[in-house]
Length: 258
Image 1 (cartoon, rainbow, N blue to C red):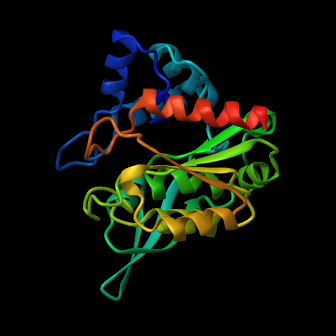
Image 2: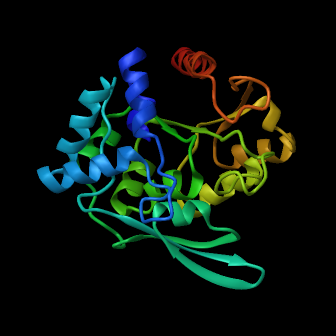
């Protein structure tokens, strides 16, 4: 959840971030859904304006920064997976995130929604844009399924950094697209944003298997590959925030110097 990632670095912010990211475990319709998503749905139903709802939760978390929605209407996500030769259509964030098989197609429902002007303005005014880390199918790729937003990202003069996940060795059962290589992650991203120039790709050193192939792919996108120690601890699937900040600061400072 983006809001949780931007929460205040104190006991209040961390506690509420944990609460909002808690996912229900049950046999009912709430299974797999996060508390934060339900709270946002309630606020959007009450206030109508999705930006107001996000701002209210941001105030609760004492967020540094601002989170903006991709579109002016509620969205769902639908995908088709191929598993042992059988095609299966699934709908919903949880269902897409947990579906087994190879992704064949991904789309939003409704298709081609109108992007919010405030989000497009934020993209236009940005100096840097980061993509990832996160669930590749249900969190990262959907940003490029809103046509106006994808076009704004492609058109933006901001430097773009792709931050790859830490799960290429964790096995497919761990999370969507986990167990797939960094090259496959970038190729999947390129499928949905073929015209977007990538300036930097950031990867943890333990994820680097076929470095030469990855290097060539990143260079074909117009970017540079940066390899660093980014994990909280050996084997962890979570980025160390301080390590990430240090590397990003280095990249940005180096870019400014030229």
